[in-house]
Length: 234
Image (cartoon, rainbow, N blue to C red; front, side, top):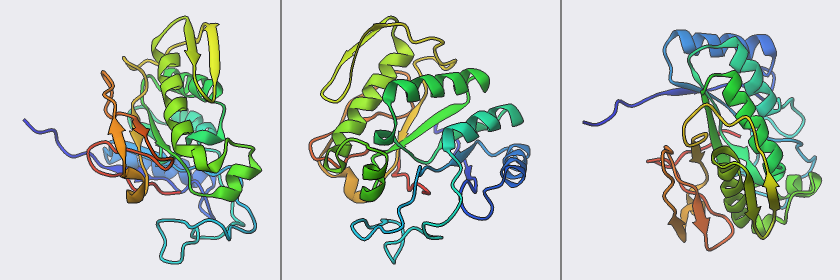
């Protein structure tokens, strides 16, 4: 029997509506209307010039609203939403995985999953804004697909194993305890979202007990989706 389609709401985590009272009011209304999930997007900084980057979801190639706008940090916002809601699932759409230390990110997401009693979804992406990669000292832009793949594998290990050891090309950790674990069995679900060009030359690796599977990219811009390709709001 086919599962019923679920609907989610993209919260205004950037721009003039990115105010705590407005975001919480929309999240509460979404929960009251029995939406399945709410999502927040991700940028850490927005460069004054992005001449070398093309935003893939706009006909102009520019991020709507421009660079000079408020942008709430998504993981902090999810922690706040965890206390303001009780049932609706809380996700990122999408978190740019290469921007953050994967061990710290795994810990933060696991903590939010505990605080929300198992409601977190990690919507993950490789990113598109070359200038932002440079501004936050992220790994090389050209390697972002491979970095994302490795970081997600490490995060999955942090959520499902104890103690944790991981040896990768971009990150290595040996014999550490990563506690608490997420409430959700098998770890936090990972949904990969990205532009359709990112789906070329991808080999999917199955993940047990996960709603989606991260992908191993043979070429740097890589992603795979849940059952249909997610178009992240960023």
